[in-house]
Image 1 (cartoon, rainbow, N blue to C red):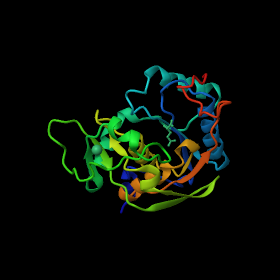
Image 2: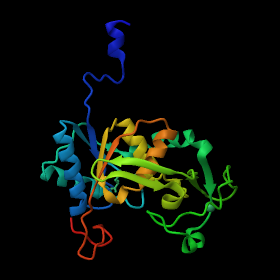
Image 3: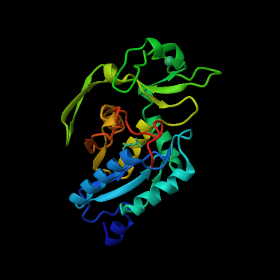
Image 4: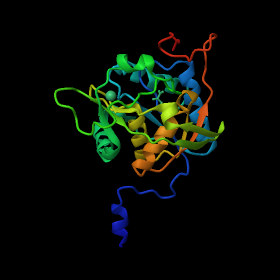
Length: 256
Ligand code: GLU
Ligand code: ZN
């Protein structure tokens, strides 16, 4: 190899940083106090490790994302002097990356045409909501004349990970999560898949985010294994709650 060949490397990384963190808000509205706790937590952890702190806008959900909110988020972060490193990644500009990942998962996917209204009322509750009862688990080809969601078949196993703040964690796929939707009926890719692809493409090494995403970590780890992607480390911060112990959100009118 000549020196010229070295310079052709599309990913030149002299002294690669050992810490790359990120803040990844969904632009469903302006940042509220709860999202700022996550922003500040991930920012400070990156700075404490002399790492980089990237900004990713998770605007893949067309129903929830608002153009205006994206600009507002930039202003809010700049006002608070939470300056991000490098280029911002907008998920809506990388749909091909997620579609490609979905094709790689093909052997583990099935098509689901069930309407939530039929199975949810009787389904057991998991850590993130009702557990889908796998009616469609054998539907390996798209059913004709019907839009269907695509689900990932999860194993009947318990999965573990280590949280830097909370210590050892364990969740059982079918009891706590159930087979998740990776592509919705309207064609949109689900957050859980997009986030895994992005964390890998942005070389994220450390994830700091809210505890509402604790259980979904085992799903993301599972996707990383299936897609042969590296696994970052995780730290889940306590959530800012309202006086009646609800998570702050746009739904309960958390002010910007
Ligand atoms: N976009 C997600 C949210 O706003 C966060 C994703 C993550 O940090 O992994 O809740
Ligand atoms: Zn189904």
